[in-house]
Image (cartoon, rainbow, N blue to C red; front, side, top):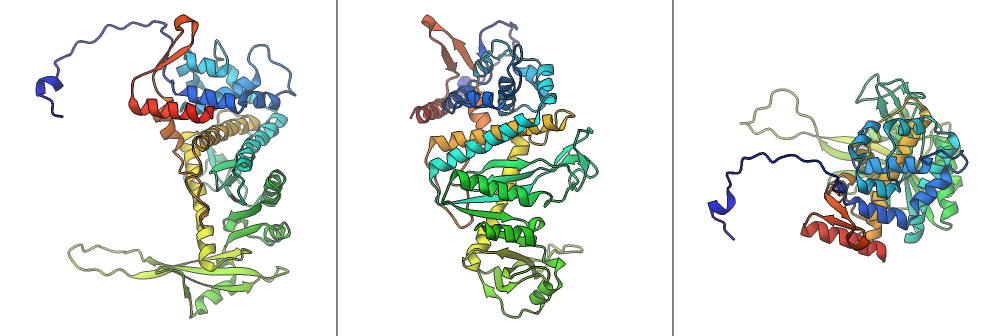
Length: 456
């Protein structure tokens, strides 16, 4: 349908008169779907159990304060002082069950007074909520990915140290080790560590603890583990074998002269596809007690062009090979193992989303336990949005060789912009509470669909 210029253009230039009235307006009308979901899973009651061992505070309960941190991150804010931007928002107050929100000093004090028992209980609750979802899915196998991620800071927070940090060299940092679930794209739990430790520091005990936690909750399930070369050791390989856990681990083959010689002297490689070929061997380093299955993989890649580029002349590409080695106990074809191990790259997407959309990188206080609690709030915010999306529809994928997530998830930032950050108004006509959204067909369809799924 075409419109005339008169219908489209206007000469309106007047600046409207400004008034500020208590109209019970909210900038986060879509937060109502989060409120409904948190009530459905009894989130606040479960948080209260995590702080029950501590003495009751006079006004604001610790569970409510921690829940505000989760909501704070869901709304897209980073620093604690940013809470002033929604201090008078009526819907945020209702979600938290408060008539008045705490100030920044109260939130900061709660983090500074965090104790180890509360942290342990919150970490257990985080894992329990993920395991509840896995139990409802009834999957025959669960894939655990392990890797660390750096949390940098400019301040001298307790427990930080200067370690390897390719983005912010010389910065103090934490280096937690995370366990993520490939099928749901959620974080199961983490091991908090200073920034100067190697990836494998405390890894064996942590890995076995995660395996046992899944096995206790989901008896009979097949457990798979994927890790990079930092976790390659006889201890970890032997422990996983003893626990009947299927695994694939990258091998730092440059440390082993025998492996390098095997690769260099190899004449016949078996093709997986046009770019990737392999051969395998039953081998062990000299200090290992038994042999394992090693896959040697080479990938055809273009060599970097150095020197001046002559765009007007034909310049053929020169190809070379990149090599990697995988140790595994999986009884699959080489092609299936390569695809399976390559799927662990999805964990980097989880870390990226946690840092950009859930502020996982932010370190708010100088106390180690307080920063660990804030990290837990980030993980809860991320997992809750994933869980809410899983609640809305059945899995859109079946199990793939790469163990891709069973749902095609919308990012937290996208969900925040399209659903949560929407203007609305709270009114009570005839004594009935009503939340009015701005008119929009897509928004109406999305919000009503979420409510219908949660009601079902």
